[in-house]
Image (cartoon, rainbow, N blue to C red):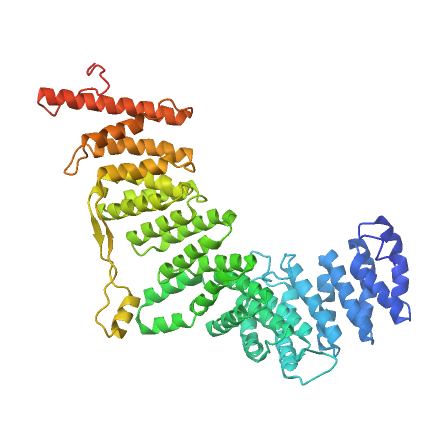
Length: 592
């Protein structure tokens, strides 16, 4: 009854130490068992020091009932007093030969807890590496447990080959609880230790290949086996097997199993061999057929083979599955698959909740920036992203798009400007990012809209394959064409976008700047606009001189004065018959 009303911080627990000691010495195993349960749940550091010798006596009891409870109580005592660990290592090692499965489970749990404390961590699922800065340092406890790896491997192998046992069988699996605990302990022992990892490689492969997956018990064992394979110093073949197991998990109808598989795959990429990119870089640096074959057998390449399954998870109705799949896809992207996976990300951008779009746009920008095969594809992808999520994308995404367009060739600038003008015309006025970038490009490169544009994309590998299978002749890539626009048509489209009631105020401000730029770009050149169009542009610039919005009013007044000044200088130069001079466009003095 003491375990129910009292927390472990209660001072009255100190008064119960003698009572617990008396109960531990009782001949009645149930009274002693209750005392061990109380110690396992409530023992403080002082109680642990006082009662540890009594608990140690029950570790050698002839009754399995008391031995397993004593193991759990000792785990609590050692957790509270880590300095006592070395005193009880030998006792723990001897219990590993116990025939009772209940005792074995608790002993393995006690060893796991000791290793976690020895590594300086508080997480049972940590990597188990020593906390000492010296990589070759091994504590006495860890060294003692490492000598038991062959015994643990033999115990796990016996469980795999054990026939049906009604006392331990769960869903056709022999004692899955003990198997999971053993795999967890092996993971902690094999982390950072090549010799121990080699000793357990065979049994890990046996667990991975012989465990049934039709029941949750088998799936739990396989999941723990994968965790162990990825944590120890296993070879590439075993890691490929682990990735394939997770790939099968992704095909399971249970969302919990799929969620766990996606999380584990993402962790495998983050922690394993520097991910896919480093594996490809190593293969490319080595060159030759042999290096390619070696790379084909790595966990990274095995994960790429499950790429289609991961992408299909983006269509799952469960939002948590979609988010985990999205995180994994970012890790899967490399130079060879960037076009396909970016297309999938853009498709998901259409369906995802609006609150997630900003983050996805940031990630797509990083992917495009890092793995883009060419400038045209990069700009095309960014424009498509702005068309889908221009309302949610951050300002740095818009700025990056402008930078990429401005640094590109004139041919790509013409393509980008034509495409952005068409996207602005078809938009309902709500995609703020698209309109901001579009207004800047139209104002900066509006003269390129007055010329027709045609681009013939090269054939892709897929097109080449289709050409080989096509009986009607060669396959020709679809050309991209934009016809030349009249200056008045360009002005009309920009004016229409600006006048929409959904148009944001910052876009209207950029539209005024766009009109001012077009006024000068359309005033000269082979395709110069007529006087009526130029006058219309001047009127559109001045339209907001009386606007209650300060930014619109300021731009309208300043750009109007600038246009008048430029018009006066041009007229004066025409009268003087020269095109030079340092005339001040605002009519001020020209010299000091």
